[in-house]
Length: 454
Image (tube, rainbow, N blue to C red):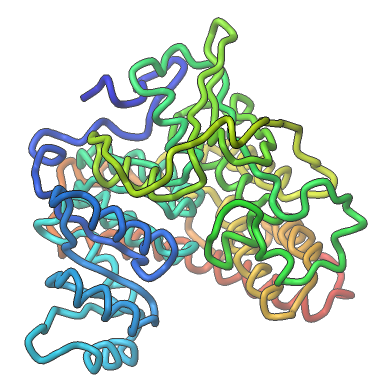
């Protein structure tokens, strides 16, 4: 199976985890837990499960508050365990389930973490939105699962920690982001020949606009992605190009490369999902239609390649493929993400722990996007608020303990469900104070833009 896995150990590529250990990847049917099952990624994942000819079965489903949709999914697949955000959602969910189906219903962040570490499940799709998905990702890794990672924030916040956990427990990470799944496939079996990783970006709905033209952008405009149908938060991140900035950080953690070896290239057609430049100057690209069932299926069903219900790519119909450099002046979020990553690397955040600058970057961006979607700030205020938060980081960082973890504080073997969930919650809680302080600063500055910078 190593021939189907990116290189490890360097010098060119040092992938975040080894392939799934013996007795994990070869168990069929593969029991999967889907966190964020009512969102876009989760719904596509269920489509992949249903098309898998029995190779995949659902062991658990989770959402926040879309209980009606969750109930419909649960009735179709009958998993023994479900999870929702709070007791109110749990009560509503019970009312939607028939008397002959009484799954265990877990609640809140502890419930999500337990479900992620569920005994008997082999693979976990981590598709909750934002920093809220960190604890569940950590729980899955601590329990030694195949972690199908759609929650890029888990690596943005704690990439070095996830790497260290995988080394001890044998957890395997498979990236669901279409760009990182493309890199994974290009690097499988020949990672040490790689020179540069090229992440492609559609450019979003405002490609070609100059900085001065973006101030009047409305949420409805920013949500209208030209190629992909996604949730609200990731759609706004795509419009600001923060999504690509987060993917840059994710690439560094996934593939063990220096930031300068990751390049962003705008490709409006979204046909080439990423490229690898090799030592001889040649390029290898992964192409496909813009359908998330392809990367989701590659991860959940790895190493099986099978039909996923997506249409084949018709290159003649596409006609031409074009490329351009991103406009760093109009879309400063790319620069801010790179600066946050470099700041953390400069203070040794590559050791198991958390990078304070990346925690601040992510928290400020999530808070600013929420404000924008609710009319609390303008589109161009998003990078301005993120930048102000990073400027204030020396003052804010003192409120949290984000230092490196002791080497003996992480397990050397997979943990059981309860212990994995408990440790995951303890680890994720270490970012809570800084995360909350950054969000509060963003809300305050948006409400009082005349306030002097910290």
